[in-house]
Length: 266
Length: 366
Image (cartoon, rainbow over all chains, first blue to last red; front, side, top):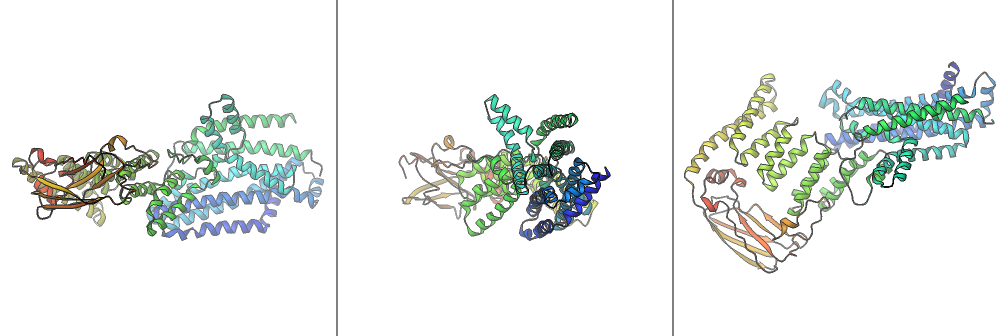
């Protein structure tokens, strides 16, 4: 396990040296920080807008950072031939893939939680503290971090896909295919809605199969209750199920990645 | 190798099981709601927005401000329709949309749409008092059906709500002529206000709320006694009037009355079959209906003089064959100074003159 951890740490260091990630991260923080320019709205609308915009920015920039950081990792190692150096040491290929995955996961976790914290600070500074008091405001708005955490877990599925595609194809194709998976996965809720609209049992079966097989990124979207401050019934259970889903899905894709990488000629 | 296949199979079964369980919870997390918007699928557009629907709703809300200040009111209602469709928990959008339809459009045909719009908001936000209170205000101020206003304000006050909403419940009871119920609500507000003030004597908002309740409680008791005396000695009131057609689309009404000064006469001119044709529709289809209503004409020096201006052909298409012109004196809707003479429900007036109605079917197109 220490091998995986060492590769993860090296990947983390490699990622944080990428300027493009910091530029994206900085832009996201600036957008979140500047949300106070909406102060001409009435107080309740202002907070709704800041929260919704902030979570949207976290998600969008999370996607871009995940794709840009992940898709180039393994192809770059192959191109620079640094992979040969790593694999000449007592490192199994699956350990290498897992190390890369956990390294990116760490980078993504750091980025997203800082963005989430920034949003929390902005929301509290923009009136929530004055209206509710510090501790109540912190408790109410800490669900921003819960929503961010859930988004992070769902982006892990995207990271796993990006690694798999980067093993099988080039960086650009990997980004394109991963983005395609993201779009299709975001439609999964819609596919589920279509099942009820369909009368044909065969169509219903096919749609259900698609809904269950395709990664459902829509599960990560708990924005509305967080933005409007209501807690739906069974939220704790829902979040646990949604996280378990990402763990299971990520495991499948990561196993496939290890499998593919084991048979790849480098 | 075999182990890996088993890991994948087990994880896949787990994914399917978890997604099925997650689907049972998803309804709570979708903004979803009951809105529909023509043939555009909201799921498709919402997915296209990739989770930014609340942002889109908020930005559209900003656009509404522009339209409002530039006087382009006709563009506001459809935009609000889209906002609530994107974010069905945007309470202010429902409130403003209903206000836009019922008050700002100055088109009585849109009142059922305003009601339907608020109903949709309530369905999507059943635990928020605001929209129940808005519905109460719609019936209190616009429709002037005080029994229904009571019904909605009761539902609003059943939820956590500020004293202003409870005050409106008491006012609605009073307007509906249920004075004992009104007194009960004021008394409860006085007691509640007193408790809050005792806890924090420097809470000036609570002091104000309590004092308002005390003032209204006392007023109600005085009025109850005074108006009971009116019922023992009712007065005969009359209203006679004539209608003049001073231009093709303008009618003038002139009348004489002994109703108290500042009494309001409700004037309406509508299609004879309007009630059968009017449907509650969120499509806001106006179906060539004509519905003119004016609740403001006042009695001055024993005379009533007002004009029915039907020049706006979009608002008053006059496409029907028969119209009903009606003048009504409705005691419940009168200013307090008039109610001091006629009572809450006209108990200070004699029999058939309680509501003066003159149905005047012109029998020909105006």
